[in-house]
Length: 392
Ligand SMILES: [Zn+2]
Image (cartoon, rainbow, N blue to C red; front, side, top):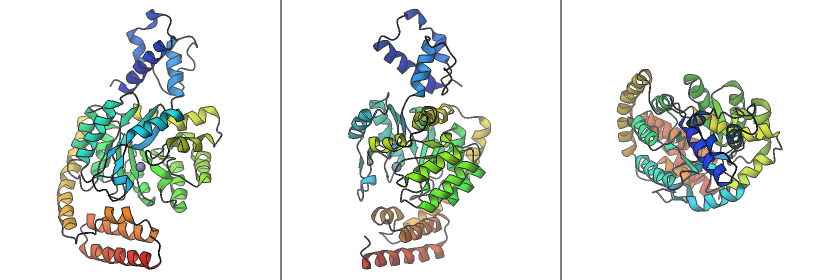
């Protein structure tokens, strides 16, 4: 399998170096050099004067934001399901010195459509953006592989899922495994889920954003740090993490190889988020892993074709979850209007409420109607409590 990412990076960098007059000798441009191994640090031993080492150096010092949203959402009840404009982000990112950015959709009620939008955006800025496919693990049940396959054809290199909507299912993890794609899975504070995912799918790389919780849940941070230490396939990103010492601890205990720079742009400022990493004052080799080396290493593993063996597993999971997905949709649609968990979570961010909302979502996904009813009551109660206490 050709390492397309390296080819792309090498080609881009060749152009840049040529523009800058750094390539004096045209004869140096031989096809064989396109197969140069661009692993982080790989070019160090090579002669300083060679193009190979210059390209490797550029890749090693490349700053890649592994977490940014792009495109329009359709719900329009909160910024993250309304609009993620890429242009202002790109201006800020350029000023901050960010070379490339992983982008995926904001919250959307149809990820097939949202991913198409992202593909069009990536096509406008091919040198700067790398697409990830957003999937809703239960709503898209039965069609996840085909969504990811389509996205792969657009050049996408990873998958994003969000726990406000659904936790990763076997079908989703099998799709990630089949393409060797990293799965950026927001677990919204429910770090215990990571133990299950990481051990059931040891050959899928999970990036758990926000050190497990965008909502500043320090217990989740602590647990995710333990998981970074224990599981070779668990990574985190720095986006939106406010408690700085947890980032320090994560690197100290799990090593710089397990932490990735991410911004959660365009809603968070990429320059501000990048500065957090700079403030760690790490040795240059560790800092460059966090700023780009780690994500490039994960993206290098992505395949374009699927092994027949992997395909069989994909089919098996697809057919079982297609049935479950259809049933879950039915159960979900029979609920009274206004109880969609996304709707609730988007409006109210109280911890108690969010936990009840998760229970509700899980119960709905598991077709447990008694639990659905119970969770619904709890959600309603939590909302009232919040309103009474002026929490919202
Ligand atoms: Zn995000």
